[in-house]
Image 1 (tube, rainbow, N blue to C red):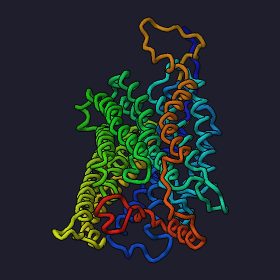
Image 2 (image 1 turned 135 degrees about the horizontal axis):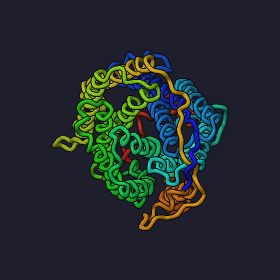
Image 3 (image 1 turned 90 degrees about the vertical axis):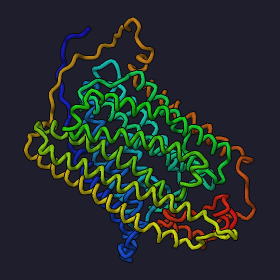
Image 4 (image 1 turned 45 degrees about the vertical axis):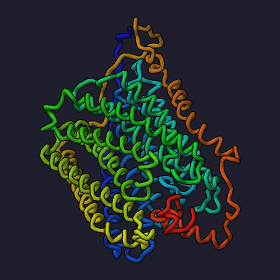
Length: 571
């Protein structure tokens, strides 16, 4: 054993930058969400200007919350925890800075181009091809910085949080590259190389797994580091975390087709999506149980400590969302929920509860430590918790109500066999009060986040920032002697490159099995003789339809239900 201690310094400056960006873009993204929610109640707020319409602002909101707020939150959590878990400074300070400024540039370019109507119309992948290339470059910079830090670590074993970081890096890279194959026709206009069913399969293989590997797996890594730290307890079960990680990344990648039930996608692919979605309950709830039981010895502190409150609700919301997702993938349930506001409620339980509350908890825990002081006001943090929790409830419950209302009204027939509500507007007028309640919930959520920003600014002003944090650890020796009875998984925990490769193989299996038959076996996709390539005029119409975000409300897809064919015509 090497007892010679090496002195080194953690880079807290890059963590501080990402923390500031997380707070800023959080408020921006939430405000955009509130504004478009109000537009659905008060259409006059569209203002009659192209770049202020719902169709332009809605993708701006989703990108701001996912890639600006959560994205910066991921990098904040990863860069803080990674250094301490590896007992090493980040691999390269210049790469850290390029990563930070490159990501902020992407966010600004996304805001400008989406408002200007430059969009591919692909969910969570709306940005045009030059920005896609920039995303790939910045993501690779992040990966090099992360893997370089892991390789030069002073700890033999790689802790569970890092497994999730590695899985996130390689999977998001694969998803982004495969989904972003497009044919540029000008600087800010491109068309996807895929078409029809293949395009839909690739889009929702990406779309579902963007939620899985951007909004879930990195935050699970953050959970596995910060929850034990906040609770001052070890993770409840290390063996459960092993099952959680490998089962989750293997199963998640298969689930994309559950977004395409009752479509032209082959039945076998739809069924695979459903089966694997249902199986996802097991590893997802394993992770939730692991998180909650890690906190089990700290319940007496939850009453006072806002950080633990946020973490308890965040993990609970993760459990709720990951139970509801498989539920919604069952065909009979999906027939009720799809195209209704039930789906919007489901997504926001995850986004506001899991991602939002875990980020708030980490910020409240992290900022006082970076600035070597106590939180300015524990009372304000608790107010934030209760206001935010009420905001989530008032957001989600009216949307569930709206979703059931929509589905029941769309499917209702008179005794004579006619649609009872043939006019689509009849449904809209019924759910406007629910949209108004949702807006109040969103307002409460934003109010809480602004309280947090004020609280943290006061904390920052009262403290003294520790940019270079001194630490000591023995150098990592090349020799490692296995202990008797050591768990088999320890082998890969000492080998980050092998873990990266293993993660890549595990996530490719599902994608390859679903895509290859759909792309290469022509009989899998029935052709329709009436479907022809677009005429130039039709293509211009499609471009306007995509540019103005019409696809956010109008799917143009008719499912094989009596109510839909009676209303719209044959599917």
